[in-house]
Image (cartoon, rainbow, N blue to C red; front, side):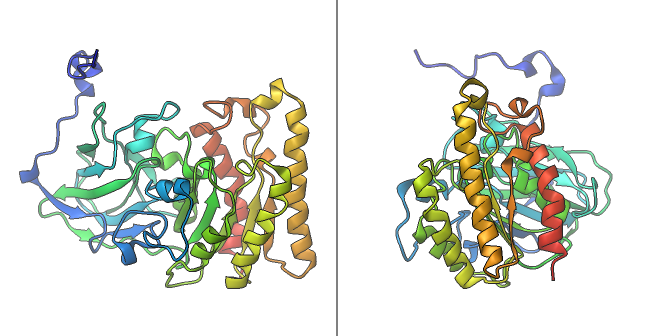
Length: 376
């Protein structure tokens, strides 16, 4: 029997503070997320395809169906601007409703907003998220209300595991709008990786580790995480190096350990993938990572040896590249991400919670600051 979602339990029936009335159009001016002076980031092919998409819509070489489909998910996308509006609303049309069993609807399909100046420790503060209706693929909601009317930088983050067909920002009529402060470096950090890179299973978009690092380091991150599909295919590498960029990347990151399950294949594909990247960007700082431990290791100790063998291969791959003269390539052991109680950092034995992502960012921040920001 179909569920009548209008009659199911809703906390706002009992708690008036949980009610979130839809913003009234007559009080707001609406702008597309890509309209000046707003700054859209994280979508390297937007100017070409006019889509909120993380890979080209019409690539020179065909991608796998998985990569092509997941490229529509908007993980890592951001819009930033300055405004004195005391309130901020979003109007979003998705390509489908929430449906993930291991993610909160706001993480999968929602938006969250941050207020404050990027790159200054703990100065960007979470400001709010919209309430999502069950089984709905569109929403119009407040991110925040009733702030003092003063100029501030605002950064909303796009959904992690859904496509976005329309994204609009609503501010008070008459509010001032300005471009945000520039990034610390003009080129983005390009992160190629797995479901953890894409954001499974952050409770809201701002808790994805690339979004955490973006606001802490004041860098644009192009998130190319493809859930279950970071297989280091050469056609994906060739699409990445053909990315239409105005400036050379500030950094490159490769996280493929979790998805290439056959160790023999792992020993073949990442070296070839890195070779393609290095032929295009020989001097850009490049970080190779191994996967964090999964909960199954506590039940099956033999899996520890499997993970460590692969970690050691990737570590030695980086060491060999450095010995051959590529001194701007680095390695990060995923064993270090979560700490001693690493089993508390996932939602389903492998995908990170907010705690897991927060700890990942804490480990990666000083390393990325050193190699992506301070390197000359």
